[in-house]
Length: 244
Figure 1 (tube, rainbow, N blue to C red):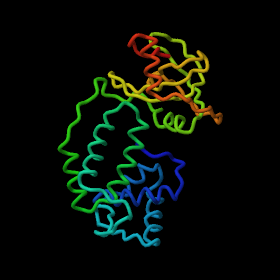
Figure 2 (tube, rainbow, N blue to C red):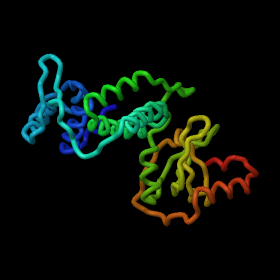
Figure 3 (cartoon, rainbow, N blue to C red):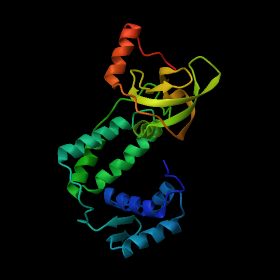
Figure 4 (cartoon, rainbow, N blue to C red):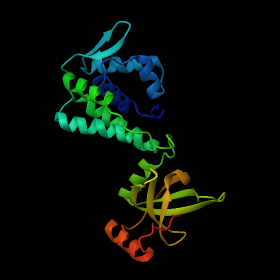
């Protein structure tokens, strides 16, 4: 999945450094495709990193790598912690939200970058010896989780265009994200206060057709998630929360 074409050069240089640190060999063609720029731009970026003191080595006919032993401080992981994170990547890769997969993979690149050669070999070995069953549909169904997470933690109103199950009509709603969960059907859901219905509703992210983070903020809801669950149990006699 290529990164956004408007990524700043500083961000790209940092990301290229992490790519070099997390992989044995990196090809210019792969980097150009990843960042949506020309190979000439990548060559200029590599020169800039070298001028900044990064020990990059060119392997004729193979690509580029870093001098062994070059470490980006200061984060350190135990072998068990690294294994847990690599295992987590396998789980995340099977979810149905593209934004979560994309952001987690970027984080894993940063984690791999601080492992030494032996730790990296062990992590890669474990990754190739771990299998997580496919989801039933085996396809990505949404790309909104990352933005909804931001809205939830920053108390921002989200405007969604939503299509209910079995209906053709699409409704526009302003919602206040309250919580996120992954249901038994492996779909990501957002519990939110719906300003249209004036009550909490469940919204399946794969039914959101379009989403916009508004510049408007809402006041944090005072109740906890546990309070919400208890209210719903009492209200619906252990039935699921009303869907949006």
